[in-house]
Every structure is written in C-alpha cells, then in structure tokens.
Length: 340
Ligand SMILES: Cc1cc2nc3c(=O)[nH]c(=O)nc-3n(C[C@H](O)[C@H](O)[C@H](O)COP(=O)(O)OP(=O)(O)OC[C@H]3O[C@@H](n4cnc5c(N)ncnc54)[C@H](O)[C@@H]3O)c2cc1C
Image 1 (cartoon, helix red, strand yellow):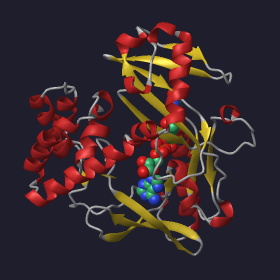
Image 2: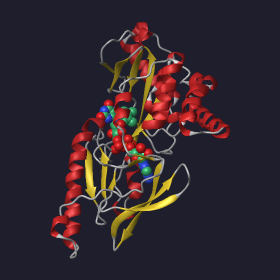
Image 3: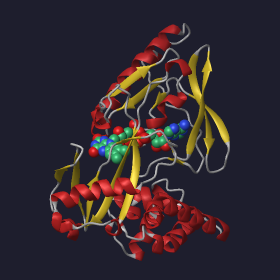
Image 4: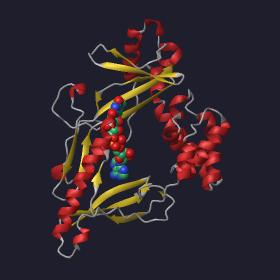
C-alpha cells in the first residue's frame, strides 16, 4: 500500500462483471457488513489459489489437482534438531524438520483432496505419517500424538498434470489470459511468488495496452497507463498504510499478556485485523506456537482489540465464540484420536 495500492480484507468477490464479453470489474461483498458493491477495473487478476477456476468462464477453467498438506509443531527438546534437516518417508518422499523457537516444525504430507476447500482439517493419519518419519529417523524422539503442540492443514493449488502420484505433480505455475481478458495464475510456490508477480504485471500491461488501443477515444498518453483498481475509500476495511505500522511490526510479541495486548492493538489499528483469530492465527502465529493455541489469552486479546475497535459486550462475546469454533475445528483430530 506504500506504493498506492488499496488493500481490502474480508472482501469476497461474488462474481466478475462483463461487458461486451470483457471483464470490467467485480461484485464484492463486505463479509463484515454484508454490504455489496461493484468495482470497476481495467484489468482483473485472479490469484485465488485453489478457488481460481470459480471466477473463470466455465469453458476456460484451469484443471487443478489440489493436494492437502499438513505441518505439526512438537517441542524441540524431543527432536533435538537444531538445523533444518530432511528425512526419508516409507513412501519414498521426504519430510523436513525445521527449528521454530522452542519447537520443531515438521512437514509435510501430500495427499489428494476432493473435499470442501473451505474446511480443510488435519486427520490422525496425517499426524501419524509425520511422526512415524521422525521416529524412524530419530528413534530417541518417541513422538506420540499427545506430543503435538499444534497442527495445521492447507491445500496446494497444483495444476493437474496427469500424474498418478501426488508428489510427482508439477509445482510449476501458469499464467492464463482468457478471451474475456481475465488474467489467472495457478500453481506455483511461495518461493516463486516474486517472479510470478513480475510475469503477471507484464501480462497486465499487455492486456491494458491492447484494450487502450481498441478504444478509439483514448488519448495517446493514456495508452500505456496501468489503472489501479478503484475501491471506494472510507470503509474501515480499507487500509491506507502507515509508516508507524512498519516500525511497530518490528517488535515481535512474546508470550506475555502485556506484549500480546500490544500486538492485538497493533493488529487492529495498523494490520487490518478484524477478528480475534486474525491476531492469533495470521498476525502473531501464537495459535500454532502455544499448546492451548492461545485460548488462555483470548480474553486479553478481545479486550485489547475491543478497546481499539469500540466493540461492545455482545461483539466481544461473539468474537470469543468464533475463536472457540475455529479452535474446535483445528483440534478435531485430537478428539477423533481418542475415539479411535
Ligand atoms: C502444506 C503445504 C506446504 C507448502 N510448502 C511450501 C514450501 O515449502 N515452499 C513453497 O514455496 N510453497 C509451499 N507451499 C505452496 C504455497 O503455500 C502456495 O503455492 C501459495 O500459498 C499459493 O499462494 P496463492 O496466493 O496463489 O494462493 P493462496 O495462498 O491460496 O491465496 C488465495 C487467496 O484468495 C482468496 N480468495 C479465494 N477466492 C476468493 C474470492 N472469491 N474473493 C476473495 N478472495 C478469494 C483466499 O481466501 C486466499 O486468501 C505449500 C503449500 C502447502 C499447502
């Protein structure tokens, strides 16, 4: 946003708007208020991960083969691992063990997934697979499910390359320009994000130029312009950027109430945190680093965020309830473990 972008979170694209067969914008729903609005754009880039096909024309949908992967965190004292290492698995893959403060981060699994993309959860089998690989490599670790501090699951937005085995599917990305001008990106990795972004911007320029030339009325000087998406200013969801936020973000919170309250206030004020789980899961990572996933600090965070956001008692209660639901979904594998 320091370069002039307007960023919106909790803003769902319900669908794209098309005129004369060309994408000219999107219908957005503010997930906080339920309000909808249309925004217009000269070019729309669709970078929606495993949901990428949902916004494309039906006839042009890219065929994805999402695979599920999980990570687990266990106490570092159990693995003794101080550097990043890889271990072989029984199915000829590798898993890695990475240092993560007092914890070790172990990942990943790679399995076909055809379930609900909005509700990806960890299974006992996933956990056992990773623990087995570590126990085989470090017999002294003797890791059991009970030793898992936290676990989380995600989907890789891989392009279907017709491979039988999940881990043989290419991790390469594709940038597609559909006949309606929509630019979509599929596949890829975090490590290739920078080069993907650069290639997408080159594609944006091509589409913008082509459209500018097509319109007879445009001024010559406008032809090379890349127009920014005109989101309406003034909504609390839109963040204008603030150099102070960068300064404050440098101080990483530690596990103490005071620091956590400061992190929560900072999240609400400068980092577009809207809900309790934004602070625990996506701004601090405490959700995965604490054995109770931060549950004991939820009242502290709700008060700090509430003071910043002006939440009343009802909103605070609903935030705590929302956090409990997310906590329950994330820990479901533990319950399943007991039954089995
Ligand atoms: C277990 C696992 C391990 C991985 N390990 C590595 C690794 O070691 N190295 C590496 O480089 N990569 C790794 N990856 C891959 C990496 O995480 C992905 O390539 C990357 O997250 C893809 O980023 P993305 O922005 O394209 O998609 P996403 O991160 O999926 O982001 C898409 C976003 O679009 C939003 N969205 C979707 N539909 C809409 C809509 N209609 N309106 C508004 N928003 C919408 C979603 O909410 C989401 O936030 C791993 C992935 C997994 C699952």
